[in-house]
Image 1: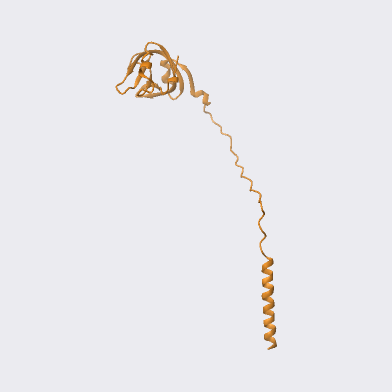
Image 2 (image 1 turned 30 degrees about the vertical axis):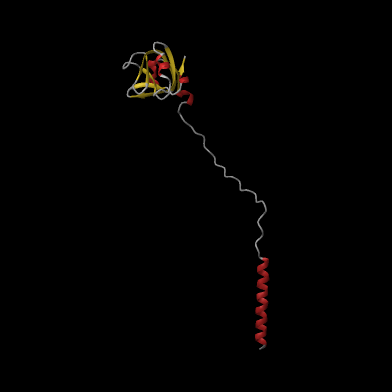
Length: 152
């Protein structure tokens, strides 16, 4: 019987120690304001290119005959208006340098964006238009979307 009491006492003592130890091993509380982790630094290598500068995409002032060489560029095309045609839909075609279909360059205004009467008044005058030069069905043109693209 004494052995049983000793064994029981040892078990109670072991349980008490285990409980006491587990309370002391609690995890520490997190810091109130932890410092943020530094952002990763990503090094960007320099870009080396042989492409011309963006300014080279602007062609300057061109004669109607020169516009074909500058398709895709923003430019001013200046020349004498040889004819103005208004379609049934209200599209206006301003031909420079010669009458259609021999005109080397045309300014096009779709469906009354600029009043047709104002554009028809340009017939016979020397006019400059500014915009991106495009080619459509073999014809070189600038699309007029605002009146300020027509320069005196």
